Image (tube, rainbow over all chains, first blue to last red; front, side):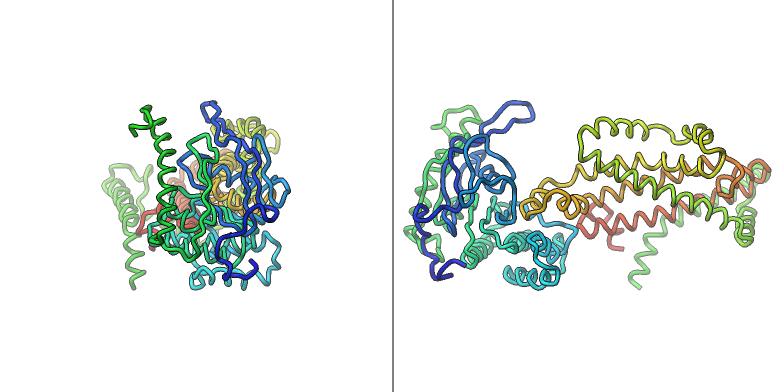
Length: 283
Length: 267
């Protein structure tokens, strides 16, 4: 539990005040395409995330946002540099770092309850406790009534909520969200943003949230890290002091959104210019 | 009532198809277009079928063939599953053994019969051997494909939840591969059944539908030949219907019913 619970929903502590939860130090990563050319995805990235902080990674397509998440999840290894949790190198995936994908990635052969129980089983919760705890998690995302439904019977938003319940059920210290609401309609997206922020506040987990949506980043984050056009580097950092719950028409917030948006637009223009072969100022 | 109506709507096309075949058959024999010596009337064949069923001859022969089929299919499923999973899991295994399995799959299983007869004698063992060789390559290839086609996203989800190694296989990869695997079994049993009948027809002396077919042919007993063929045909329909139902259940549970015509899925 975060000390003070919901009351401390304001800005998170300065990341350097305590030992960081997550650390990337001089991280570079490149991929080899099917044709055999090497493409740099990340170049010399360094940043830290404090325990309990909500950081949004924002950037144009191909800026390596998802690669950073995969490195933190342990699904990928860096070419150079260090990726640390609590000062220890991350070598493989583990239930201390849960992940949300754009696709809910629920197991289609299991009911919602089964999906959440699977997560509990992976963290060695005894079988007789799994049922109740799975139900409690589903209730938290308002899916108690659908515990026995199969994933395909639900709407996209409900599936993503179930995925959230499954991710949180193993009490992760870190939640990694890879554009989890990218495929949802605006209303559902708003609902889920609220649910994720609430869950984050209640559980005190550290949340790294990848998005390409400036408003989403500004609504959610303690801190927004803006990434450059590929190869991804860190361009700018915005600390958002606006207290929660936030509204987009808040003067301070809307100014921040405009700032970030302008900066992001420049990067997007660069990507477009590169793709179309025209100079950036025409794009 | 609604269910009955729906079921009948699904069944009538096949009833019509059967009826047309029967009608043409009856016309050919009744008009004498084909002499009764070559094509007995449906009624004659029906009487033969009913008689041989009531004396217990057909049930006994069918039972013997089905036991061989079940045994051969079970062994083929075990070998096919192990080989298929190994092919999906290991590239060297896929390149070496996998290429052999592809070759076997293309080879008519009955080509093994002379060798099997030399090894085991002209008996049941040779028949079952051919059955196994007929079925397992199809099952192995389908299993390998099913495991390879498991969504990488589900594997990633499983891994980030902490599953790895054997656990990841058991809880994520295997259940995710089940629909493809069931289809492999459905193909495999058809190969097993064909190989079994072919081998029984050639090898003489035992009890079984294939043996009986050859014997009836030798006695120029056309009615019995046709009756036996009908039994073989019906067994095929019954077993395939069972596999189709299993296939549908597995898919429906996973929300994959779009691959089945909508009205059939609702039935």
